[in-house]
Image (cartoon, rainbow, N blue to C red; front, side, top):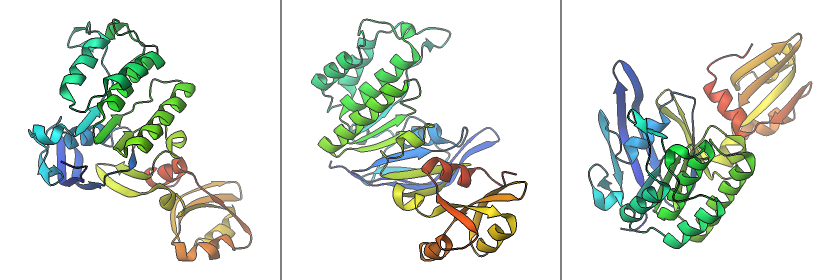
Length: 296
């Protein structure tokens, strides 16, 4: 099976009375690095679990290269979903050693690269004899990253891989990701709350909000549609007439509005008098889209 398209159609999932995913459609094209972002409780981990057949769905279907992923080992051999290790198992400590996890991964992933795993073990200064319950949060993140990268799976998904890392190791992780992508052309999906420092890595960004996909767009193209417009309230109101205003904040007589602009109207907006128009970064865009209302 060659690298294929991952497709979800009509996905719905509830836990009791809480609906987490609502008739969700998503297409992941091969050979890209995707960023998945959303607020806490938006359904990111649930979605990733369903996409990789680690969680059940209420409705809908998930296919990879046109084949259902559920209980289909031939398909799952091409997919890696690497999640953070847990220091406890049920009611006791997780006494399994790092080498046990790596040995299991080598069995489970047919493209496992042991030489690469060994290099990452050394670079991350991980002791394979150490028990999971003895690892720091950062070390657990390193094991998660190691398994994802060394799996060499065509579709590799990481859920909050950098959450436990300091800024130096986060930078190193993204460099390793880019190096691997340049070498292999694998498809990556990275779910993260640390948006801005990862934005330059994401070729495509998926924004999940309240169980629905708001955006699945090339990152640069998405960001370029958004601007801050600031100035006197009357001037901002005049300039933003006919433009989608996502949020606004007024302090005294000064107002700042976050707007989404059709590319054809961007030049006119940026040429407007009596207001300042400035670009937004991915984190700003995310807050504007998922903040749900005025900021003040």
